[in-house]
Image (cartoon, rainbow, N blue to C red):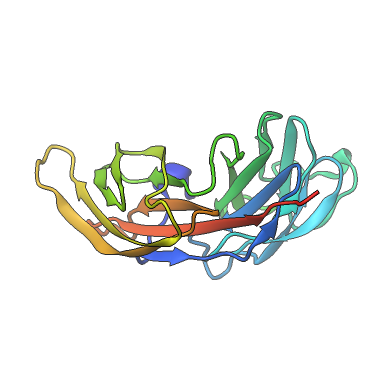
Length: 230
């Protein structure tokens, strides 16, 4: 079973998502390293209603509205309309009332017979994570560092950090990332490449290991929203 601190690795890639309209209380979903047998869709129940949701592997889902308050959300293989209909042991997570927007990070959990997944919530409220910024997750046991455009990157093992915009305008920039194995002083390269910055979007980036490879991999997901104009 994958945990947020031990998630998957793929190639170095920046993955765009379709623009989405902002709603008062929302979530977007991402299924990390989903096996071929994993479900493509499930039903999200927030205590008020069930809605069928996509579980995308290579980008964020569309924006889904969810109930306000201290909300318990569950992923189910079939819709329910009442709390008493929820099968025992269904994968769930609680979204605190203070979070107005979040990411639901789904990972494989074959041991769960109700729906073979686990869920973790990441706060994506605009007050905490602003347009132009990048939210980094270091899911390895290594120190990660480098230069991301105009910003220095320094991540301790199994940590997360928001860094400010790597450029002042929508443009390309150089991302140079390396890692240091615990107990060593040698900085080993991960990548040096050009990334695209959009000042009207947010970027979520995961640094991780895959299949026991020594060199970490990097994957970034763009989250662009169309603001309500009222």
